Image (cartoon, rainbow over all chains, first blue to last red; front, side, top):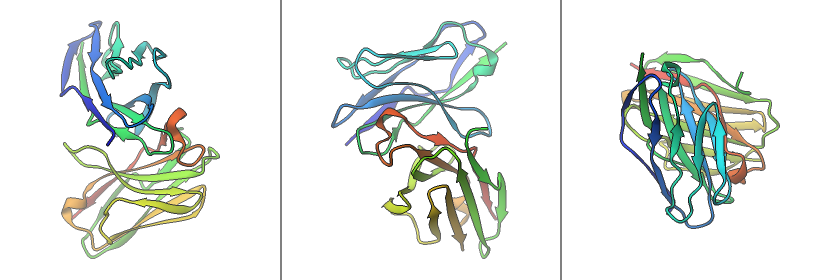
Length: 111
Length: 116
C-alpha cells in the first residue's frame, strides 16, 4: 500500500538556521506530493505541493522538490523564524485515492 | 478564514451525552472527510463522503455517526463516547470528488473534544 515516512521530531533549531525535514514515500501509482503545516491549536494548512517528477513546490520561503529516483520530497527553508514553529506533515495522493499522511514532524525554533 | 468552518471549537461531554460536530464549506468542493487526531498518533481517516454519498468508513465504532445532508455540510454525531475518544476532530474538503491528487484537501480548524 501507499505510505509516507517522515523523520522523527522534534527538530529544534535557532532562528535563521537552515531547515531540512526528510520525507520519503512508497506508492502504487504516480503520486502527487504535499506538505501541510499545523500551527498550535489549528487545523492543517496546505504549504506546498508538486504533481510530477522534478517539480519544485514553494511557499513562504519553504521549498520541496519531487525526486522520483529517490522517492523523496524533503522540505527545506534557508532561514527559519520563531513563527515557523509548528508540526509539518508530508502527504501523497494517487489518483482517485484519499491522501496518505506521514506521522508529522514537530519543528521548534528558538530566538 | 480557511473556507472550512468547524463548530464548536471546543467541546466537553460526559460519556452518556449526545452531541454533534458540524462542518461547513463554501469552496464548491464535493468531497468531505472526517479525521481524528490524537496525541502521539498519526492522523486517522474516519469517514469520506463524495457527492453526499459515504464512500469510506474505516472501521470506526458505531458511537460515531456521520451525516452529509448536502455537499456543503457534514456532521459527526456522537453518543456514549469513551475517554479514549478525546481528540482533535478535523474536517476537510476537496475538489473533484476523490480526485484530490492535484489539489489536496482544505482543512478546518478542528473541534477539540474532551470526554469526561
